[in-house]
Length: 109
Image (cartoon, rainbow, N blue to C red; front, top):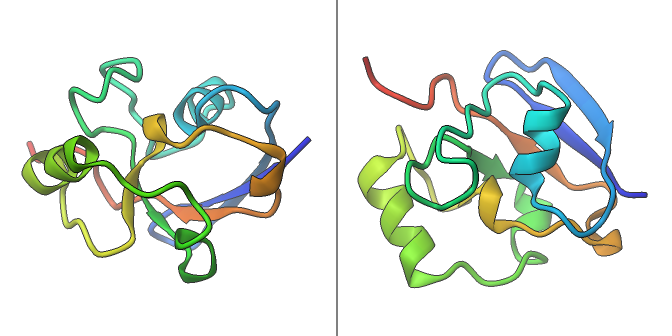
């Protein structure tokens, strides 16, 4: 079972064991990972599951789609070149050790 590390904007880590097959967002939401709001439930309609993928892992993930990039560009707070939506990352055994950081906030109120 892959272990995924979530780091919040203050550097606090939460490591969770995730069963392969679901999305990274579903697992984070189910484990109460701070910083993942998942307002749309994984429909790629809100970008409240935005994460920054660790430099060593970004290239190992499936390529980002134009739709995902568009959602990040138009709805994410402070996106960068390693931004992904965790609802679009399917958990596989190959992701064992993945490290992602959650932004300081997902929505701007």
